[in-house]
Length: 383
Image 1 (cartoon, one colour):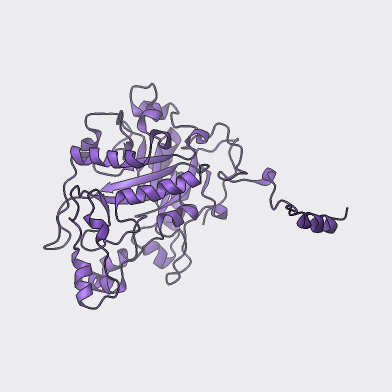
Image 2 (tube, rainbow, N blue to C red):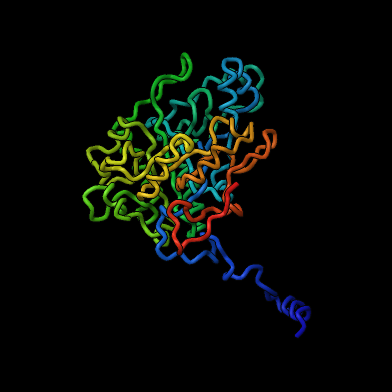
């Protein structure tokens, strides 16, 4: 039969005519036609994620008030992101969430900057309804940069879980978290509650209220039968990619004191749901490093990745690279082999220019340029 007759006949029968792209030609690490992946582990890939993923753009009236106090602060805070599910749909496989402790609720219901802007006629009122609920809240800077795509941590988790359940084939998602406390950001502003062992236990409980064990990659699953988590990592303990698909991994990105409080006496995070930012390559809990300057730390990142650790780095910071279309840091980030490249620009911002951070063909994952072997895909240049 002539090919045109075949197309007409199959259309009449309600059948598909020709496959758009046979699976034999596929090179993706996700999707029904994903590449064969024997031997690949979850530290053998590279993904892009967003920095402060929850953050909505500051309204112009509030940004103008910030600019009156500090031009540099206004420049560095002038970014925002789509809702989490849209970011995941666009291929982000790492997210960052900042949390504050609010066990009673209401502590952050009356932020100062939105109130001042409202008195000056800002037409984007601040919705504080979610702030009244007990539990962890999600925000960048209390009283100043409050608006979030998911105001409570539980809501963020629910959105991630919904997307993950609908895409069970996805490569592992990594969620890094800052636990914010300390002094008030502005005179007379709210003082964040301190994170202590009780707060961290409550944080674990919120994670486990949404994600069951079957959905999590946890330190114990990497440590295996080894004495320490570090030994498990160096022995190749990260789960195979086929086993880690559809799962989520949480990492606490904090200083040594908060990390110590989170460990609660468990040197290798035994029994805990989160990893922590490693403080050094010889620490018992060493598994995940956050090295945010891929130019200054490029050699260390490559060495850590080659050894088996997972590393997150940043392709841009404070809007500067995007405003200048400076790609040097982005190039260094991808070349370093860091498994996670964090950005504020999963797509270009039109008023800045073409700057963007994405993998080839906008795929959600590629084989790691430092760890790839002959069984892995060729690594194409990112953009």
